[in-house]
Length: 437
Image (cartoon, rainbow, N blue to C red):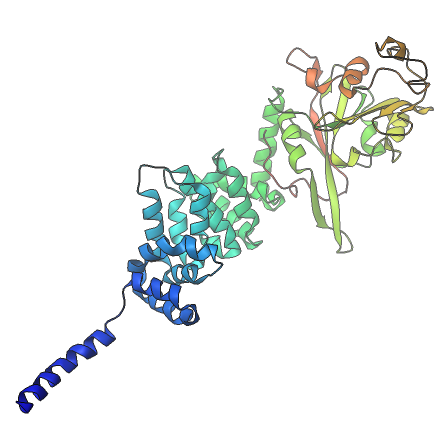
């Protein structure tokens, strides 16, 4: 009897050892992680070792762990790497319900540079949310995402993805310029146009070979033959000088290296009209771009950030001396603040108005101004002595020169526009952003 019991005990021992060493499944490991956070590193390693099989359990627990501020689930997914990202993408994109782009971007953003190839493949996915989320995740990897460059370039021509693709480029290091130039020189042909677009966004077009620069110049000259007003919003501040004396404005404002520019170039260029270049002494030098329009109804309009303080820094008076007269107009985006000023040769600023300035009016009212007594609410002593009702910058521009917002195809226009820069030798290719032509 005793011998039989001993044999039964010996037969049972291997079974007990097997139960003790059998590895726990992913769900059990997540539960173990939930119950014993002190052992997190070991459990994370075991979940990572389980590979793709652990992904469903990890995704199910992700929200709970994120709310508690614990990074273990994210770390396990990251360590699994490409298989986990593929499983995440399949789970998110496999249903008939479009994924939430922000949520998918947060998921894809958990992964590191080992997953660049998988993220690049998602850039060709038919779902806009998948493409947008993949771009966001790649941008977060910074220069480590450079292997995805060829997959990103075509998205520069996609209205929906262009902004994200541009931010991806900005997250790369400077060596990407050489890679883009190599695409321009050697192909593949389907990417050459996109590479040029990318170089423009990076402000690196001055690095283009002479052949490419000459081709762009020829394209501009062709477009100038039939320059048309694009469907763009004009800037909120501008200067106006007579069309027959505008040439003197370049020297008066210290502008250099002018090149022909279409209206489309000028209006699109206002978005990126400042750049930082290396100065002669090696220090950084800020340079601005100014657009001078064709002659429009007898006037030339000048746009650029260097003109924003024109009435206060003496520029408007210098322009008036050089060109005979000069006008300045400004309104903010909400039309809450208005500013206009008129300067004449030998007299300086003869009349101006600026919202919130004390006093708001300078100079005597011009003959065409509507007097303050025409205001239905007018009462003696209610206004400054030299005030009038002409506060709207656009209305004044329309009265004295030309209001940009009233320019249309019937407005007389001759000549062509120019780009000029505030520092000699800075070049025009240093300004980031692609220009419409």
